[in-house]
Amino acid sequence: MNDTIAAISTALGVGAISIIRVSGNDSLNIVNKIFKGKDLTKVTSHTIHYGHIVSNEEIIDEVLVSVMLAPKTFTKENIVEINSHGGIATTNKILQLLLTNGARLAEPGEFTKRAFLNGRIDLIEADGIMNLIEAKNEKSRQLSINQLSGKVSKLIKELRDNLVSIISNIEVNIDYPEYEDIEIVTNETIYPELLKFRKKLINIINKSKDSKIINQGINVCIIGRPNVGKSSLLNTLLEEDKAIVTDIEGTTRDIVEGKITLNGIILNIIDTAGIRKTDNLVEKIGVEKSLDIINKSDLIILMLNNNEPLTKEDKKLLKMIKNKTNIILVNKNDLDTKIDYSLLPNNIIKISVNNDIGIDKLKSRIIELFNLGSFETDDLTYLSDARSISLLEKSLIKINDSIASINNNEPIDMVELSLKESWNILGEIIGETYTDELIDELFSRFCLGK
Image 1 (cartoon, rainbow, N blue to C red):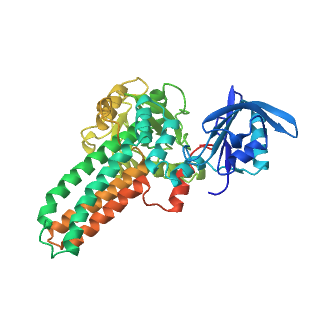
Image 2: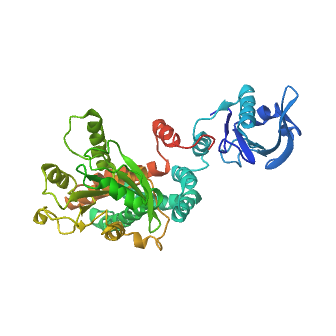
Image 3: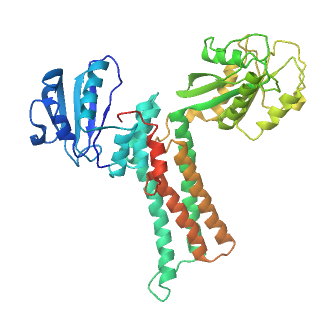
């Protein structure tokens, strides 16, 4: 991180202004080479200066230059921001001049990555920055602000402090058993504390899963055999003709996606290719995609036909989704009944997509399944990304291991091993422990210039 990076921080295109950001030890000198105005190396921090960007005495643009000196900056490095007139040619020309004079083009998310590596923010706060940029509703914005402000990080740090308190007491007893004035820690004395800690951790996990739904929405996958009405259902929910609808089986060869908002929560709805055995190569690829999407979805809507008996494919799909969050719809309820309802669960919803019957029941069931009605008043100070929630669940596994060790009358030092692992896993959430590969992957999803 000894070099100086530069990138365009605003959306590239026609606009009132563009901002080109430069960060690094040499940022002032590099910008000074192309700036005609005050000597930027002699100005005070957090000041703005009028002048021109020039190249060989040719004026490129009239600009305002902001100077922010380390360590009181986003990256904790010297930062210079050039505010130019918006426009593709002008903005690119200024960036080109910076690169010619010693700066390196920043990688996606590299400014935020430097802020993390320099101790300015932790991983939760970094994730909050990206989530704030991508926020699509008010609740998502509030979640992101809480992450960015450090409130969520404080929650994880408190969990780690709770564990440290238990672990340190165990360590003292193991290392200094001869001391008579210390409290004797046994499996029996820490057992109530672990139960209390587990309850707290489970609550945070459940709240974080709700937060993930608020932030990222619910991934809904519509599956079924060909020609059961999947595409018609998608079009009805979206209130537009997004998917092609015909009576010909196998019309949908690839996934078709759309979004709707239900109780302030985004539903990412995917209409999949009809799942059946086929010799058609293109359709076969679509079926394979459908099966993959099933495993990644938060909710699976299985559609069956009221006017057809259950087929082997139907029964296979029913078995496939048995242990997943699902809703079973029986479509074409306006036609003669040929399906055997005794072979289906009791909580099916009968619908007729063409006649707009049962759609409201479907939406109500989704609200009920994901408890969407309670999100309005819930505290939004929780984690909201899959990585962090997964680490919370891994931490919980280690706590359960510790409790199991106590129940099995294992030595207290064995109990301590699982507690230390749980503490380390929680540290991965905020970035106390990390690998270079993880950091590169996390920040690569940021936009260029952030």
